[in-house]
Amino acid sequence: MKKVLAKFFMWITGWKAHVNVTPELKRSVMIAAPHTSNWDFPYAILTFWIMEVDVKYFIKDSYTKGLLGGLFKWTGAIGVDRSQKGNKLTDYAIELLQQNDQLVILIPAEGTRKAVDKWRTGFYRIATEAKVPVSLGYMDYKKKEAGVADVFWLSGDFEKDMTHIQEVYRPIHPKHPEGYNPEIF
Image 1 (cartoon, helix red, strand yellow):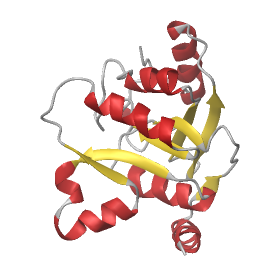
Image 2 (cartoon, one colour; image 1 turned 90 degrees about the vertical axis):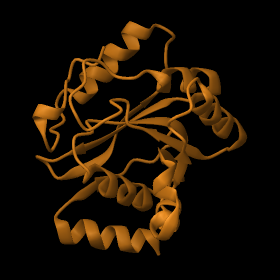
Image 3 (cartoon, rainbow, N blue to C red; image 1 turned 180 degrees about the vertical axis):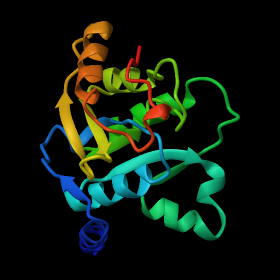
Image 4 (spheres, helix red, strand yellow; image 1 turned 90 degrees about the horizontal axis):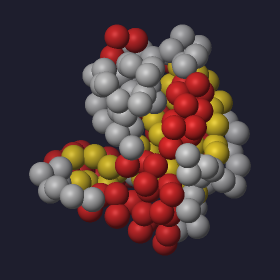
């Protein structure tokens, strides 16, 4: 049912999903970038439904409560108390990936829809410790296309891996270019 709804909504809005599901993708840490608009969320979720990939993402716990809480949970949301400090969230993501044969943890590495000087790198630790690849999810507003640009195993050379990620995202057109810094580290 989700797949049918997703295809219909994408068709109505003129968007297409670039679908290339590999075994590596189905158990990975996915970076979601560039992240400059609230519209990134629905198109990303719809694309996952079309790909039939189980995705989880972290969101403020207030979104997973109340009337809309069930809707967010249905889309894969995991509520998080953002006032807690430390590596609890990273550790929890690692644990989830270690316990599941097929699971994608979606992480907007920029951490916000505004321009940042550099990305957060918790995704790197999660992928390394959970022993899963990194998948590069994207939303290209110029092409009206959402999908996965690459899936790869980290080399352990942080600069080399981040340079590769930066180059993959360079040609992607965000909704609000002023909110995206293509120099990620």
